[in-house]
Image 1: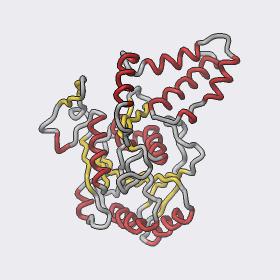
Image 2: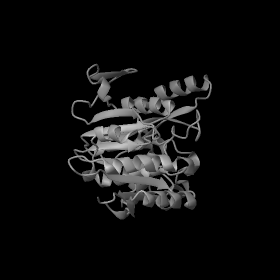
Image 3: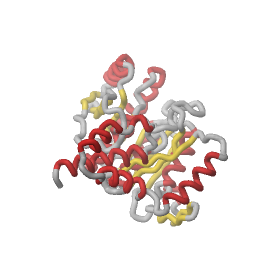
Image 4: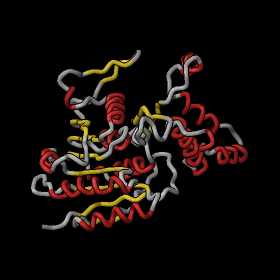
Length: 319
């Protein structure tokens, strides 16, 4: 493919990703499109963009207008559906709220650090392949679902504490064709409106969505999970919960699976340097070291690339 055609394909893909992820129209690369169209002698680029949008549904026009008519006759919803394309050709589709804070929590939207961590995991899938993963503060599930679809884990434990977040998390797990471990005896297929979806519980990982209170969970309870890898995204944002998070990380660092402590990776956006430094200081007090993990090479999802996102690998104290 010649450079011009490759550039046009890439621009078309950016429009497709933005549309599926529910990005604001102002976030689309209109200036680049205008420049490209002005310098192009044909309409192939515009045709490619239109085809990508049309490929989302088999009968886009009539059904789209029917749905739009229904929406206009209803009150404005506080939730929406967004899809995040994976390099496998699959996607992660999530039910999300349109407000940053909803029902007393920030856990009902997908944050940039979750997208960053998912990208890094996909590029480093060997870390997760055939292993048991625990995710702290899973939110509505973007990172974990992406890992389950692309990294072949043996088992995946989603966890959170807020009941509304857990409810939406379980909905999103089902929405992406997975069945929770507690349900595998009762379900082999899921019915959705006008569509039957084959679920992946037979060949996919064992999936659990657990309520996990950082203030009350015990070392014994965490040890019973027998996890190989622990991950978390955007859990370092509030100094008031830092001590609770450190306590859980300390207990996890002391637990062992097959004689080894789990690998622990924490991704977060550095919004307040003081909060970041407090987290590092508190890690040091309990004997947990850390190192910054080099950034991955491929940007798969749309988020603010200028965000100061850091990924740390925690280093347990050698006993």
